[in-house]
Image (cartoon, rainbow, N blue to C red; front, top):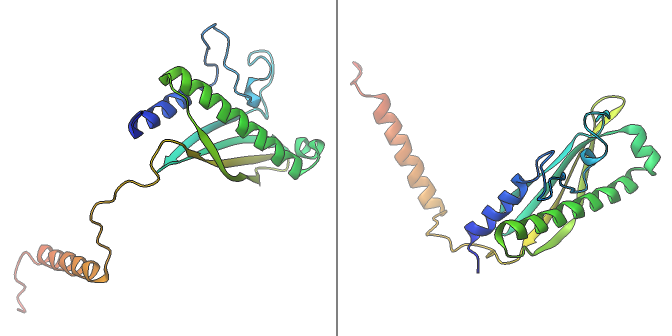
Length: 183
């Protein structure tokens, strides 16, 4: 069984292997399912094809984020915002599929993710022509403990009051290194 550190390290290495133009084993570019993979970057304009993804890990939850720019007419031609949100769900599925495949190549073991909730998509206008799209989805990492055993955490009001008074006393002592003439 892999440790938490090994699982996190494997996920981060899988994400690091997904840079734009990264070669696969057979010297072809990787295919994740992003818009930047369409066409030839030298011959074709990549306007409106700027996109990428990233991950954040907190406890046993993996947050996959996807950012892109899209033209307003593309959203309308697709059939509206609802259809575009469905497409973002497919893109998230492609990203997770790639992460699982690359994790398997990097570590030799499989990564099990269970989806928590739906894909959330935020579309913000950048100009009269373009929008910035930010999508994210949460996945539970199977194999990581939900919570680590916490140490002795003291959050009682008495502790906070004593901490505040001790810090206040230290500040006063530091500020009054000399004895003022009025004392």
